[in-house]
Image 1: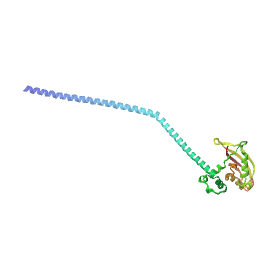
Image 2 (image 1 turned 135 degrees about the vertical axis):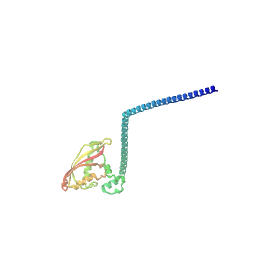
Image 3 (image 1 turned 60 degrees about the vertical axis):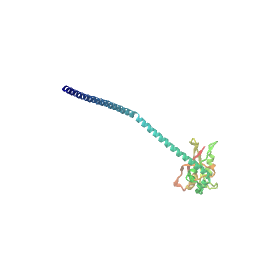
Image 4 (image 1 turned 180 degrees about the horizontal axis):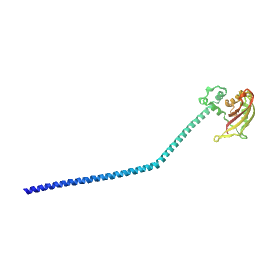
Length: 267
């Protein structure tokens, strides 16, 4: 019996030692595993840091080399777009303006008798189309603009002389029996100058010396140029007065006056 008890005690002691040893081994293994995981985590963290550093370096390189160029290209593209858009808007406005002008010219041609009575006699103005009455000065210039081309002389000087002598120099241009507002002493007609190649639009400098009895006759002559439309279309000429040499201090006296005109026409 004592022998069995001793054997049992020895077995218990052995088992206890074995269990303690197992626990110790397990603890050591767990410790080693923890250290191993910690080392792996440190290695992974270090790799990520390296990757982050590399990405930062690449970002700096890309930013320094490509971002300014990309930004410059973007700005250039934006400017080009804005310029093209502005050009399109300008073209649209020009097209709308030309379309409106064409429409007004057609109406003016249709209402030409009303335009003449309104401008020359100050009658029937209320009967004009609003688009015409709102641009009466432009309409007048359009109706005055006729050809001056001559196959023989280049410029139809006879038409210019007739326009001055039979219409502008009379107090009432519409009447051939109207008294003259002055006496023409000389007329100089220069060569035509091209203004616009596409439309063949020309201008001709003209110098006229006229003796006016007083300033009233001078005003009459100027009004005939600027505020009158000749009834006969073929005799019309569009003029612009560039210079008038008149002594206003002697407005009540007869004096020779030089007027520098420019006549416009399509060839």
